[in-house]
Length: 301
Image 1 (cartoon, helix red, strand yellow):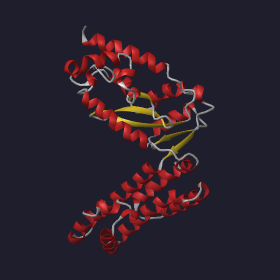
Image 2 (cartoon, helix red, strand yellow; image 1 turned 60 degrees about the vertical axis):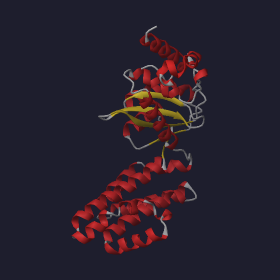
Image 3 (cartoon, helix red, strand yellow; image 1 turned 180 degrees about the horizontal axis):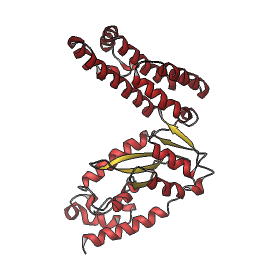
Image 4 (cartoon, one colour; image 1 turned 30 degrees about the vertical axis):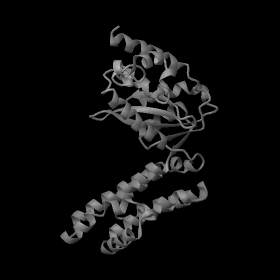
């Protein structure tokens, strides 16, 4: 029996099994992308945040591959409460096209990451604009600035204080980033909203253009940022699963058939014997298969 025939058999079984999965009870989902190949080729992944089950993997990271999946969730409409997304506009547009009233949540991780990007951009510019001795100090301060003040040991805190005294604009940038982190320590969405819009007003008035740009972004996404207080969900579990998917891909030395590869992550937590063809895979064993991922799901390419 040729491997192409084996692969086609698994592909047919996996496709049928995926269609039988119950989606009408899904309440909370997360959507993210991962790099499928070098050269900015991405795949979109959707996760049930309550069960940990991958619901769909599709090629691309625009609205096109996401909308058909969201259509399959329409029977779950009354139960679907929220979706966790980063700020990639295509995903937000896809969700709003199918579920215009669904709550979109931008989690703290991605928002703080934007703050980190703003302070790092400011640090780079200031290091080029200052004299050589100061430039070296600023250039070497990246991890000190991005670490988060609440986690710094005493020795690092002392270095940070010296750095802040050395450059006033960098000190201002650091305060902006640290104040943004305080948003998620507020007791309610109303309190967080007051903190957020006060921060936006300050950042819009600053001469630090990276933070002025961030203020415009957060103003446009304020509702989604504050929605975290109603639904404290995150794409974090999906970020971790994306690493497992990449390992799966490496174990199989890459998948030439991307349609086939799309099916595998949906069964990443299943035991081999519970999958279609799983018993055959176990009987063949590593001496016939090389590694398990070359025989059954996740299997022949």
